Length: 141
Image: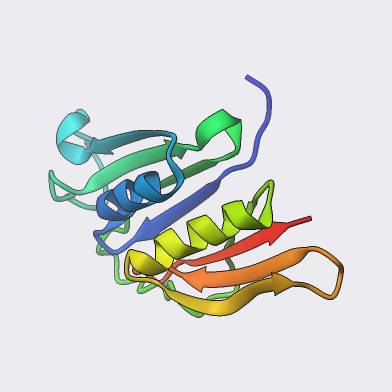
């Protein structure tokens, strides 16, 4: 297998729901594995809820990207989802494609962070926070 880079995100018990929502928005192939689907893990520092997501992968259509994730475990670390110094960048083929995806995220309970418009560098750019607090940046040449 060739080397690759993909995004991985942990959410507080909502990764399954988020992945299903993103699958509805972007399409592609979705795989969700819950802890009830995996063998016991002797020596694990936590006892996961059997319904928690151990691993999920959304492969976008046409090999456009892969988004993976799992439910965050109750280890005392509270990660700030919204307001962090990251976003998931989706580069579309046309501005209309990006506008359609942004509308789906907003209609699904998200909110626009930065209007999708012509950027100073000549392309298009905008941001939306989905209902899980994840920032999606959209770009188009």
